[in-house]
Image 1 (cartoon, rainbow, N blue to C red):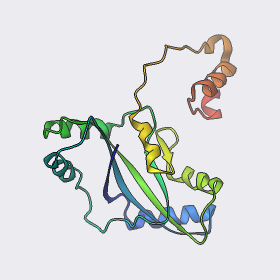
Image 2: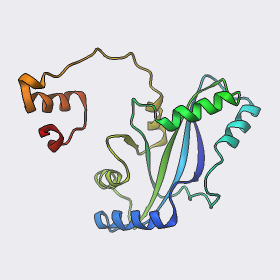
Image 3: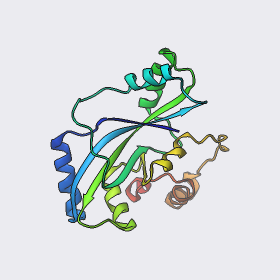
Length: 189
């Protein structure tokens, strides 16, 4: 997996708002920065020319100073097992530009948190919950964890949920067994 840094992901206003939100949960956090991180799956080494083309393609957005890559990192990526619309379009563009050895490119947001003391695993999970949408995104505390984006699996067998006979209980059981991430009010609905 190739990793390529990108432009800042959030404006100063949004970072300030996010910091205030995080500080209500964890007051020891003193700063937050965010930048895009591009992750690419290739079928081998990219040539020098291909690397340059890819770098030019991924140079977009505000030309502000890149976020300092220090502090504790939380990487938010598209939900594992999915391909984001951004990825589909970016991969198509890369192929049109002649990057045939690039199989897929995906984009995440790397958040860097400064705090008075390092956050333990429980606090990091609580803060990460404020940084992503669990329905559409996954959290990685190490860049290497994002390798799961490019896992290839055989499609599973079709499963059905008999809500007419089983009602809410059947849907709650399927929610747990299949990892649907439905909330209680969605199950009742």
